[in-house]
Image (cartoon, rainbow, N blue to C red; front, side, top):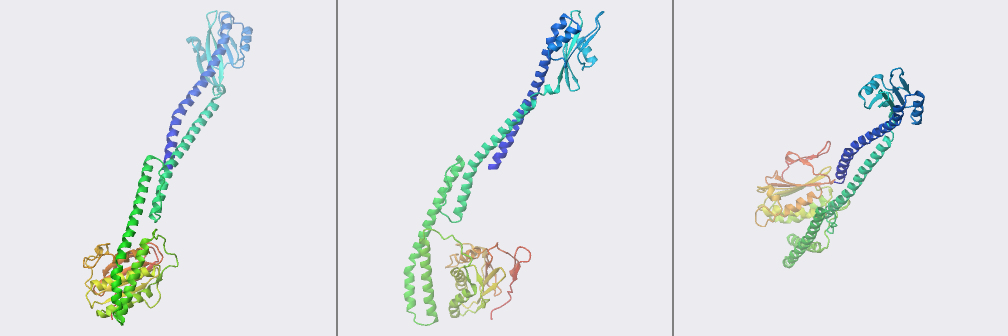
Length: 467
């Protein structure tokens, strides 16, 4: 906007200066020409009285010399009776031009080499017409013209520079509030909830700043209300969790009892974490450092050890692959465990007992894929299942589990896909990007290729079956 105002001001001022300077320059040139010929007319008029009295050559030479124009003035007296023609000074005009002036009886100008001449007729006492020729050189016609044009050009340039400077200051006055508004929007988007914009500048931008500050205040209030609501709802879970913990303590010994007590303890820890996070005064907006992350293979082994006891009770066949070596990913351990629990919990919740499932970890060059597949009835509408808050439509489904998984993947630049597994049911593919770049493009039936040459990840073999 600033440079646009400067360009508009430059163009308009230049046109205005040209519109006035060009005609004014022509007027100055004509004035200089008129001044030169007016001087020539005065010189010719100084000789006219002497011509009306005498035509003696010696007397006329003294008159011409006294006029101070002996080098640029000539007098042409025609012959009359016994008096011969008299020519004083240097003749520059053609004989035809002199004869024409003598015949018409009025002054005239004619072009000659190096300038112009003024031919002034003068009546003699004898009734003849003498012609006074005054030479006007080009240097006299243009005398002072260059200086006047230079002054005119300087004034025009000063006007242009001044208008550009004023337009630039006006542009800065308009652009700075807009820049501060943009910076405030970026800061608010980055989680800096204290970002505010000074309410100054033009009326429109001042109103925009007022609206932005009001919006920021409302966002802060809404987030505070949301945190309080999350803390209150989480705190209400303490009572049923206490009952579950007491009941789990009375289950006795055994793998199932230990698994139940561990699940209750983990659930209590998660609720405490939610309450503490919700009560914090500022949201956590700082990204994890370069050393943050976890071993995906270790987390998968740990969670599968937890779910294997329930799988054994329900008669489900389980297969785990790709966890025999470390697989580092830029995801917090607790976040990956929560995502795996959401996926495996969906398997147990939405498939009949005895349904087999599998977890595969594929470690590529720049991405890690975690596949959770089952032999259940499948998902009729994968897009609806991925929508937050919609769920699958069955009892107990809130639609938040897959949303947790999706947000985890997107935080690394990856994504989540739902499809059909080789077991005949649903396959959820969790794509975790390792380098934090843009998501890759996926081909048909599991072919995974990166945008750009030479960056093939892999094509996974989906023909494996459960033992």
